[in-house]
Length: 297
Image (cartoon, rainbow, N blue to C red; front, side):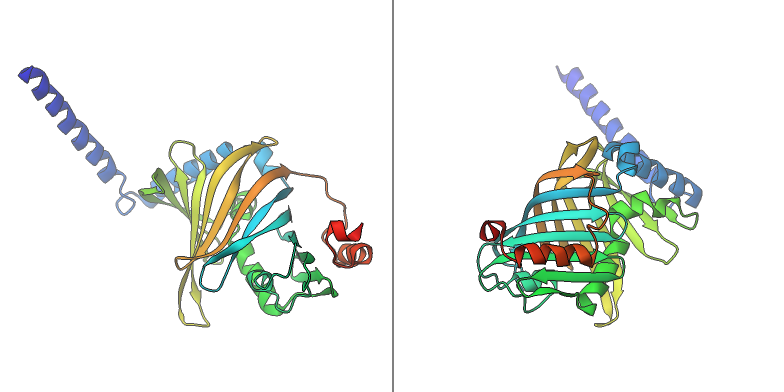
């Protein structure tokens, strides 16, 4: 019995030493840049395959429905609001909100103050490249410049755009940033830097090869300090051959900004050609006057 225990102990020590040797041999600060690039690209390719491979890369649009948490100025949760979120990659996004009563937080969380939803109703935000509009009970109006600027920043950090478009740029750089644990998941960290110098750090699950979170650190010129934006992806489900995260949480400097829970998502839903235009919002307002579907009947 003692001999067996000694052998087990010896095997355990050897295993620990072997693991330590691997970890040391794969230290991101000691491996050659060329090897780091190869490792990072391999992990990113595994991520793309896990998301659906060609089916994921050929997804040009998506539609998701669910609810978004209403998070106040102090990160407190104040309830939920029903949403339908439509994307046409790389730079068109339309979100339809359905407020059942007066909602004082909605204007704050979407970056549009003084929304006309005293008695609830439908609010639609629509971004198309460098243009944007919002529809409420008062009609259709231009999106504020500050909100448009925030949308443009978000486009640069969008992981779907990164994987589908910017990966092909020969100036994009890849760096394996080591091993770690995120939310109890063993992960590989990969840093991808585009030609403009923006670095997105991805945490990729070593088992499923799915994205656990992304981190972007930028300089906040307004406050002369660095800002860390984090996106957390959970509850992946297969939808039309594509793995989609049904829960997405966004944080800034450790403070929760946004949390969305999707009930259903569809890749390439076949949206009308004018769906992401102001004309579509004008027509919607003409039909509904910003009222909820039940009110419009």
